[in-house]
Picture 1 (tube, rainbow, N blue to C red):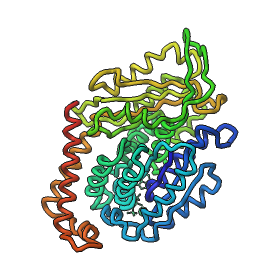
Picture 2: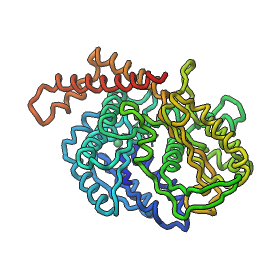
Picture 3: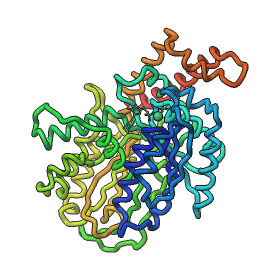
Picture 4: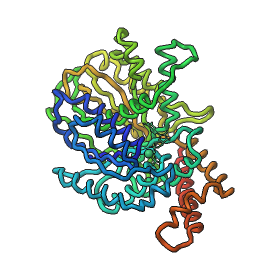
Length: 437
Ligand SMILES: Nc1nc2c(ncn2[C@@H]2O[C@H](COP(=O)(O)OP(=O)(O)OP(=O)(O)O)[C@@H](O)[C@H]2O)c(=O)[nH]1
Ligand SMILES: [Mg+2]
């Protein structure tokens, strides 16, 4: 898999992801199947990728950097999408080299925010070109959703356009709302540090990226399949199974309109992890790890129930009879929290006796990946906000400026059409999910 990290957010999250995967390498060497990962780092603001280059010079993963200039795209989707300087061709050239370096090509993942101009706009242009040029490879997006308020005036429009492009061209859209991850980490501070008091320590972007990286890495890491008899491992298959993108797409996106996937995991903020070193049960006890995963799940607004179209639970590092005695209790506890919209058979559980590749690793974790109605309140509120501001004609001129650049068409009409189509696409997704409420 080729992992494209686009814009500042994409690069910072990607850095956390690869650090998390690197921490699983036995003997600190790149071995199969982890050697299938390659990174391409892209930004229209030189200093971001240059910082990445300085801080990651020792990474074991093949990494290509694409220089997209020095100015950034000013939080404007249309500026990023317009690609006036032709940077997309440079990225595609690096991509082609990465594909050729692989023994077999499966697909890619794009990591980016849907609010920034580069992540949303340039990311949209890229996903469209990748779909055209590499028809047979899968496309995953891991998209960071901006905080609901207090960021930029254009964030709702950027998110609307970016979501509609992913809906059209991508196979799997992983959504990581900053607000949801922030509340999960705040709940951890309340639970482990302040012991029930409402006062919470300041949560950093590093914490959010750590959480996101944990969700993604536990999905991407290879799995050691094993057979169990009477609660004991009876036979271990020798080779770990690499991440299978098509299998996950098939399971998680049962309908073409519904391909928005949410995540949660037993991740514990580094700060809290360090202050709880002496409380061993926090890291080893399956009851504790299960409860933490459930606590980390996003909390739906009052009166809104989460219904899953499909879900997958990854349980890693499951050695020991303490797990196997109560395996069904742990999974049914999680499944009942997730809630099944169709049939519980659409929830599967993958259990690996090793956390990743190192049989000596004592790590244990649970992570969840699910396609559910949980995203509906966000989608509905995004559609309402965009509709309101579009009716008032607010901020549209920022987009007209770039939509019209480079050709003689009617920029105002073209921009209106672009937004109307995107809103229509969002409404179709909303009605697709409303069938499962
Ligand atoms: N979770 C998380 N969110 C981030 C991070 N950095 C930025 N964001 C979010 O990403 C959005 C801004 O996107 P950026 O990635 O900074 O913008 P960009 O893609 O570089 O685009 P331009 O700078 O406009 O060219 C905001 O919603 C931020 O909250 C990060 O490290 N982690
Ligand atoms: Mg930027």
